[in-house]
Image (tube, rainbow, N blue to C red; front, side, top):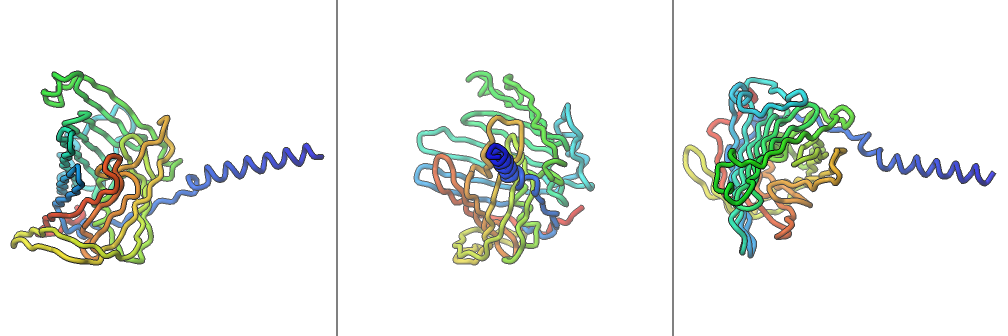
Length: 322
């Protein structure tokens, strides 16, 4: 009798453990994004973070480009069904970021992403890093995973060559099962800035949950509004008519970025990062224009870091879904 009771208790304990580990993933529900590119007021952002020993400068450009032109330049994947555009235009987002740190070489980073304006689904990406740990990585997003073509310099001599001539080459495919994970589509980290500007936010908005590919793995990302927060801004607003300095206290909408690594074939889960920021990422946006005013987070080397808006280029005519 006691043996049966102990056996039943073990089974119950096992079931409870399975419920803890599989419950959240199995019950994951992702948002149906209602994106309107016409809400995006900017086409260029300049942000800066300054610490005692390091300075980070970032310039982000957003533009609408013909889908046919992009299709011809996207990497070909040997596996999977490539993600296709839903209309005649895609958005191209380019990040140029420079990092200057004491006793370290200057590091220049270029990220380029193509995504669908209506769904924020990523089609392709390029990541180039030069100055330290140099690499060039091209990505093609498919329904079954992401194909990556990586190039690195084989030796110091190759550092002087064009990245396309680096000879340390490796291809990888990071597979996932979107149906099992519950992901309607896969977006990209930098596209979060577009999503924040293309959504009709308010203090009482419900959180948005979506699937986002990091470097080698999918992440469940939730954008959670946390009300208005007092922020001091100091940036230049540029339009066709001229320039206006925006300086002083404002009430910004605080958006918490919550992340969780999803199932993958990696031996160890990767940390989610956005523009070099890792844990406890918070994005502050203007509650009316949805303009990103500040991106904050922790960095491995410099601790808590605030990327503050220093300049914004406003579009003469807002982008509409095409």
